Image 1 (cartoon, rainbow, N blue to C red):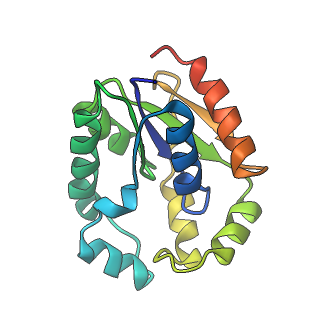
Image 2 (cartoon, rainbow, N blue to C red):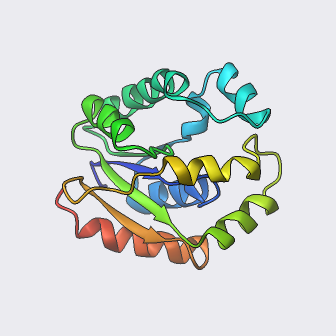
Amino acid sequence: MDTRVVVVMGVAGTGKSTVGRLLAEALGVGYAEGDDFHPPENIAKMSAGTPLDDTDRWPWLDAIGTWAHGREALGGVVTSSALKRAYRDRLRGAAPGAVFLHLTGERALIERRMGERQGHFMPPALLDSQFAALEPLGYDEAGVAVDVAGTPEEITARAVAALREVDG
């Protein structure tokens, strides 16, 4: 069992939920879906095609941070777009040992995958706002970037290997 908390981050459509579940299984730790921490107002706003602003995100990030803090001794995997450094800093404030797994990829691939999703509240039209807000991991942030080309199992295997290289 891995006792780190891994935050699977990236723009919408990168497979955070799918890879997050597989990663939690591979590491033998608990999993939480970051979207489940959104208040109903955030879901309604995104469903209507309106991007969230920082005021919308702070309570959501705090709820994820509370979950991550509670898992620090147990390990866990949670998803969160965590697009900006300030958002990751807020999560690290709650769970200082958190490690970030940034799922990256070609925009065309991500857009195609978003279009193929069924029943998700995030419309492909918001992808531009996600890329505009994205601040990749800084050199001083604990984490790794993994490309999302390939199957979920291939992506997860690359993620497990990359996370082994991160000092935990």
